[in-house]
Image 1 (cartoon, rainbow, N blue to C red):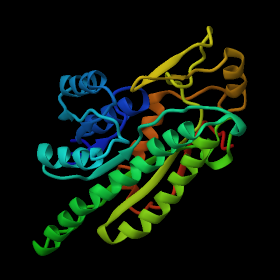
Image 2: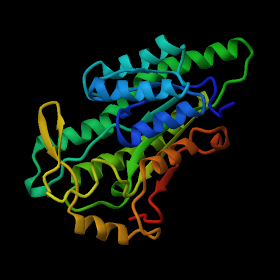
Image 3: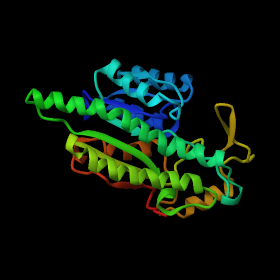
Length: 276
């Protein structure tokens, strides 16, 4: 018996890294998961891993910023598993530059993926959740506690040089969380944020060549950190190291469990003691 048996979850950006570990963790505890990634291949790999472990999952590949994606993402959960109980807004990347060199394209791209996309997904989910609550009440059944976990960063709470776009977006996620927590309390939905510190992923791991990039629909975006910079960041963390994607997923899982049913509108920092 898993703590999330019978639940249906959607996790954006879950083909790789932290999102993949979140999907695997939720599935291991009994949730049926809709896996999303920009590319179909990684999403299908996560689905295969879940199924190989005895879980249930389907993929919904696509760009979370695309028109109509949010509705398709939510509808995939309804069509595949009959409802929606857990929403994890995780998809994102960084595209850094100091303010005077940051283009409108950089600014808008990061705001779109980290803030506008979660907003659209929540907006698309509201009619589904409201209908589920109405049916339960009409049947005289208890309304189960549903969960939303939005992903932020310590950069959203304290800022960071070269990341005005990312900082603004992640600060906005916290504001979005607090507002939706107040709006959706009547549906018995808890809405919280997990703000990550330094986690070892392809977006943060040191690149000895300094030329690591990812492809965002044809756009090459530099990722990775200088090894010396990475070591310096780790030394600022009280636990003395960066976190792992599995540890990051654990923080999200905490806010999806029944034990957190009276926790809402909060920001949990998962940073090894570093709070920025």
